Image (tube, rainbow, N blue to C red; front, top):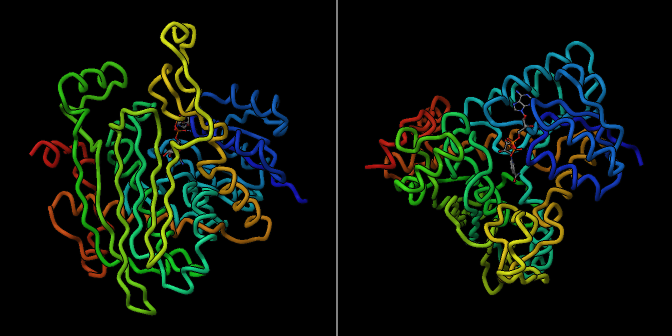
Length: 414
Ligand SMILES: NC(=O)c1ccc[n+]([C@@H]2O[C@H](COP(=O)([O-])OP(=O)(O)OC[C@H]3O[C@@H](n4cnc5c(N)ncnc54)[C@H](O)[C@@H]3O)[C@@H](O)[C@H]2O)c1
């Protein structure tokens, strides 16, 4: 098998997850990393686990010279400058086959469009990393139900939720850096999963046409005085001044362009899920058949009593964003695989080696950014947004949500 030489830009939380995913597949060597922080640890992990001879590069340009594929795994607010540097490196001779970007593609529609244009300018194949569509549980559910779908008709209602108790770094909480609150950060996952589950088997990922979106954004926990103070102390972000949504929900309506059937994808996301840790909950309802995925159900549970708990200070070994280290704990033994990181890496590898875009390319990422931003617009106006209206599409091109502008109080405190 031909091997892809991959380089990471960013060496934080998600880069570590991707390194663990790469351990579980063939055909990708992690040959380099460039990051402001964490590169030494990531390179050591890669070396120790046989992922490749991972070199730390001081610049994006140097990294690009030594890779076939670059994965942009840095924060949302540095996307454009990083991709501009990658495009510059390609112009100067770096021979890249493909370019990966983590979700969300852009903080605004304008940013996402700029990224799509940059990749086109450099003639690079792209992969938009939306891991949840690649979850084996989702793929298996749809494959298992394919005969029923063919016989009875497609899924008409899909619901998707991602919730945890809040992000691990201050920049996620700062809406001016991240691009909003939980709708921008995690709504992008849930909107994508529902759209995908609703899509009739065998049709392209953007086959169903988004017709309208209705959404709400709220600040339910982290705006309360006690938690506002905790957030300020822990993350340096003041939700009294620049609040963001810690809860969102909404419905996107899609139209099947062949049959005219309307179907609905509901999303719910929160940073106030004070249960065991990250929970992904998805279901799909078709005529006479259904599926349900709950990432907190595992064949493995451990029990740690109070006396034994004092010896176990590290709470995040059971689950991503785990909140407890005692009692009856759900443990997911292979989260990188469960959440879809292994399969999304394999999809990108195969696509780039074949000289094409991954299943989800940056144009697809742009569509997801549009839906998230239309969700913010809907919540601001208290109205359903008509996505088929050219005037709305034009407005979205220049739209930055009030929350992302740092004016969240105007929406969340009214
Ligand atoms: N798919 C998922 O489930 C998932 C989960 C977490 C994060 N993400 C996405 O991954 C991206 C990174 O998130 P994270 O949680 O790893 O963040 P993080 O803050 O944990 O890590 C960011 C890394 O990027 C580096 N960095 C920052 N600015 C840089 C710059 N200008 N040049 C080079 N490196 C720079 C930091 O030093 C750090 O190594 C975000 O876009 C986030 O939305 C996706």
